[in-house]
Amino acid sequence: MTPIRTAILPMAALLACSAAWAQAPANAAAATGPVLRPDTTGRFIPFVVPLGEASRPPKLQFEVRTPSGSPQPAARNFAVTMDTGSTGVVISAADLPGYSDDEAGPAGWEFLSSSKRLWVGRWVVRDLAFRAAEGEVVARVPVLAVQKEMICPCWDEKANQPVCEQPTKTTDRPRGIVYMGVGFGREHDGQPQGTPDKNPLLNLATIDGRPVREGEVHAGYIVTKSGVHAGLTPANAAGFGATRLQPGSLLASGQPASSDPRDWQQASMAISVNGRAPEAGSILVDTGIAQMYLTVTDPASLPTQQIPNPSRPGHTSNGLKDGTPVQVLFPDAQAPVARYAFDAGGAGAPRAVLVNRPTRSTCPAGSTTVARGPAAQVFGRPAFVNTGMNLLQQYDVLFDAEGGWFGLRPLQR
Figure 1 (cartoon, one colour):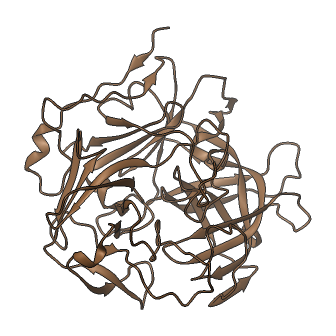
Figure 2 (cartoon, rainbow, N blue to C red):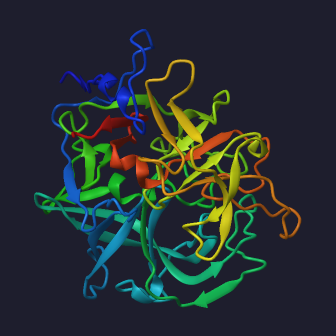
Figure 3 (cartoon, one colour):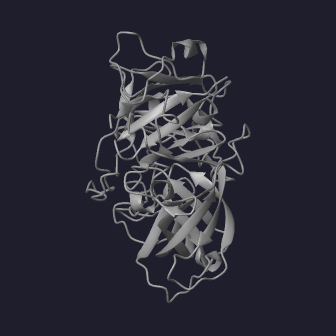
């Protein structure tokens, strides 16, 4: 069968939006997009808590089941935050159906840099059943059963171990932890085990009660305000402006994170703040947080002040002053296909724009931490932008795990 290439629709009409992505000039290099077979299938999974105007993260509902052939405890439903800034499903061991400390599974850990939270436990295989708009979708993935939770400001991303030398809080056998990360290219940022095999949206086992056939699903997803499409099809992937991703996600040490061909690095962009020349770097669209993080090589040159940190109640962080213009060019400044522009504190802006900068560390020598990628110790590092969830108020986001594409599509107004 002849593959179908998704169309890239013009976005010039959006140039008038002060906080929007806009189509580049007509002479810019044309982007292409995912190559999809006409017979691929996917399912739309609606959010039980949609992405709201009040900076609420989206939530999905799934039922956790043990795979066939294992003891069958009662299944349990969870409403879970769907986070594109992390990878892997995390549930308290005390809440996970069928779990006991005798269950075999490799040691596991995940660090959330925005909240300095380190989860430690074991990876155990479970089935996650999602109620789709039509029928049911079941993913089979390892789930991190959390046996210990620590607040760890000094966790060392390069050491890459489930160890916290100076925890400010430790909870053994915690309850109430449930999180679903579906991001890509995040292994360098405190998630060394966050490889594609942990992502439920990329590992569908059954659709409507029957096993998924080889080649039936084109691995990838589309995040919208109201839900997520699991699996790419010519219909659901139409209309995206897309850019190629670089293969081979890396650990913080610079070593390859995995040999999985679905493991891609983060998308590219260029960031200009307060009219300064754009700096090239990477971008993350993160449904797990309401604020934006940005890194530039000279943060001291930006107009900043101390502002509340939405991820750490009671703490303040370095943030842009209201009125400061921000422009993100996608995928670069030389031939951009789109841009994201706003004034800090203005209409269409994120809840806050936090600027990573060098600080005097109280951590032991050699320790490094990150603020939802890269860390406070960032002076001289490549530029980085975490848009937070605000971008999804205006755009759908596509990730093609098979072909290595990242795309944006304007919402229908």
